[in-house]
Image 1 (cartoon, rainbow, N blue to C red):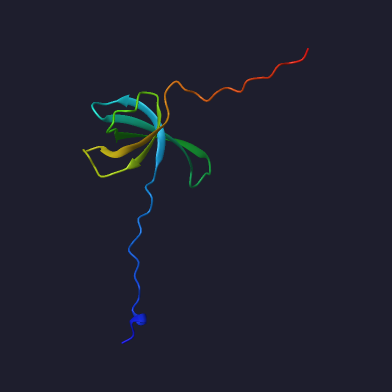
Image 2 (cartoon, rainbow, N blue to C red):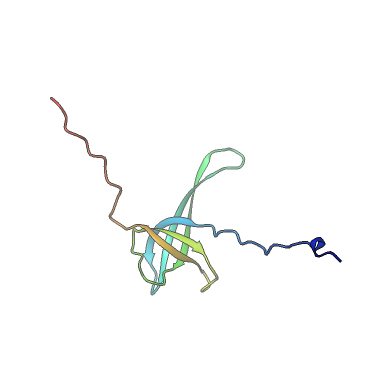
Length: 108
């Protein structure tokens, strides 16, 4: 038998986790924060964009998120009845808004 005739099977590849970005709404205890994710979803029939808001309980192992921070979260195994997301990183800390564009000197 020729060994070249055997089919080579690839191991199944995992798809990357569906990351979401939201704002920390409250700190719900030790290592748990609530993140609010706002989305615009197109209505299937009418085509109008509808705002959707979802609240997720997120596991924050290092207690680095504060109220008002913009964070990135990813799904993980269930840690409790409602907590099945984990904190990936803090995208923007609270209070550090994007710098406003400064106008140059004006001539009069």
